[in-house]
Image (cartoon, rainbow, N blue to C red):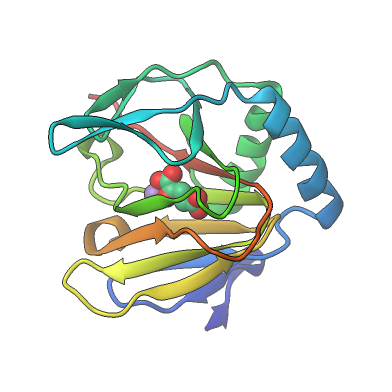
Length: 198
Ligand SMILES: O=C(O)CCC(=O)C(=O)O
Ligand SMILES: [Mn+2]
């Protein structure tokens, strides 16, 4: 592992660029932001289409941004930026060196809430999407696994941390947020993305 610009640690994975920075937000900021985001985001139970069947997602989600976005067969109409999320976006843009025009927020209410294996590789994100993921609340294990097969690599996403995935990460790897039997409190995650123009 190497510590690079702005305190990011490079997680060395073949054909991927994954950088992690713990303490991107101070513990105080992270606690306050958790409470504010919990109250201010328009949380909904999204439904996705899996093998032709619509099912409830095992978590709550909110979408903010400039453009509509399709995700697992559904088109999401974003809510306007809340001032808090817009301010977080500016800070993350400066650290990641990338502009974002949308964010998917996830609320994992307890250890049963989860997100299955996927890549953020929708065509409208372009060939090498930059995804910046901020975490608040309970720490949870995030897994990355090569698409061609192989062992999963765990990263514990601590509250106040920022994870940035770029380059070939979405093309060559999938990721998930597995459930846990340990008693854990709620966690909020914001994943900033850039939807490219047609
Ligand atoms: O909750 C997380 O850390 C992962 C979120 C994610 O992968 C997504 O929203 O696409
Ligand atoms: Mn994802």
